[in-house]
Length: 613
Image: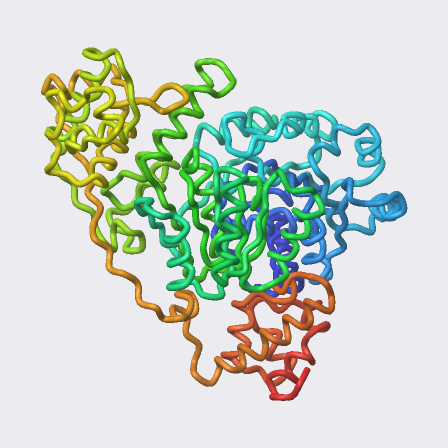
């Protein structure tokens, strides 16, 4: 006789095959699902694209009642519900975008048990009316998505998440599952504490995203560098470009558009309707580039984002990992590209010094920035350093990051560091003056600029002693000394000042090893995406795949949903390769569940037969 656990696993597998069209679970999905179906609480850490959603969707379909999903993403709830509806799942949402009649229909469906999943924003649970509604229905589970939003040290902190501990108090017998793609061990502890999940079982997957190539380049003319990346390696691809300021977002979007790249801006300064329109276009149209502040991207389910580019330095490794993780959710080759320079370090240090909060808060921000700077300046494998940051053993050589593909050199920069620190010292102590990096470099290079001659700095003993390095190399020295805390910036103008540890270098008690950027070969202009080249279809299947994509685009437009809601590229690729000739054969393709087979099966067979669908 089958045990209850066996029956639960059988039910879950049946749902996986019937609804989602997959034959097997990935990683520890089945362990999580079995645990939650049995009534256990769980904290799930799984990288973007790893299949987190199934960890609560399937238990919600197996357990009696409605799965209530707390999500911070009001603008995306409609798309999440559309994707589930396409699978035959009864889903709805309650948020401020609904009118009174629509809200009443969803509430009635919830009370009648006619929903499988109900999406709510975290602030909704602060409403007495919403809580009373939930108390009148039968709840299968609570899923808290993007759970890192509860971390006050995190990059996406949402105060409304702090109140979610009330779920356990009001519904002590309902299992809860908190999910995130980004959390260090300390952040996981904070999530568990703040959500009253200290007794929950933790499921932690590998942070590795082997399909993403991590690259960090010296910032020269970042918009032109970005344009070269898009033209040379990602023509026609969808991607996200992150900028620090709203003004930079607008200028970058205009620059790309003027150069023939379809790009849209997204930031908090735009009105809500414009932001929603741009987000919907990005999800529904192919080949669009979204230029955004970090206000954009959390929870984006678009699987074919081929690149994520940063034109400014992220504030933390967590933020960087979360944002780059939005690339390549479909598992195909993708690029995480960051342009990084001296001014980024100066700006971020200055932001920390002027930030609100006490000394402990500023120190916390500084620790996050130090880890990000260490990732930028490393001569080691970047992927390995990323994994180690999250407490996972790295590999000595991943073979798919810039430091592995084109290893940088390290050089003894002790004398160069002493020269630079001496210039800062003499300006401060001898002249009682402080200046920024550019002026100090002019002095070292022996340049008699207007400012140098105005202040008589061409008479300093350090004037002209740095001719062995070019200006770009000196800027690299400044950047790396700032990164290591051997130099600091202060004030509104980013003037350079010595630190307590500067004396160790000046006193020859500490050597300084610096990174020298290698000369990277220019990419060849292939006119095709790296992902398209890397995942070649058999010659006979390629035109079939394009016909299937054209059919999918028309169906998505007709239904007003993103193309990936119909089918992912990976599913279309398999259909094109396998060339099924019957519904029975089509049903064996991964990603073709019962509902989609019934809805689209005959159309697909018609496309495969070469006739218009």
